[in-house]
Length: 147
Image (cartoon, rainbow, N blue to C red):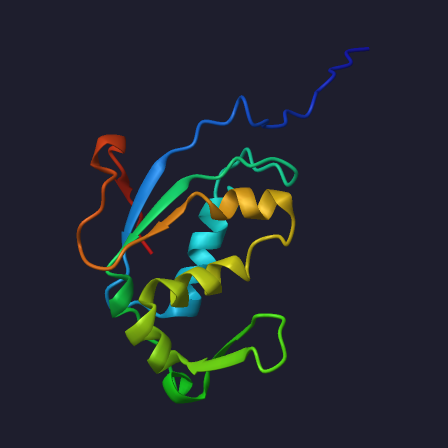
């Protein structure tokens, strides 16, 4: 009788080999872009995906100020922050956020799609969002991420 024993291989922090990817967000829809970015940051696009390990890739997003929403979200979508003090709640529409903090629009969408724990915070640190075409990560030789 021939018995083969297979052992499941798990990726650990030490054995993970992250790549650097770059994406141009010009004209892309925020939610659809955010789901793709969250998938890459978690490592779910790799066959070696391990839920309990940070095996995702680094992602650079350029032209974050040129993203778009569908429907009436520019006026109806609200971003709410609360300082913890009475009267410390602030509400901004998506249109106001794009003018004041264009990077926060995409970052908050991706942050909401990652796990809400220590691992999710570590994955979020691998996301770099920039307005405009310039980024300081040329030395990492990022690959183009197609969506």
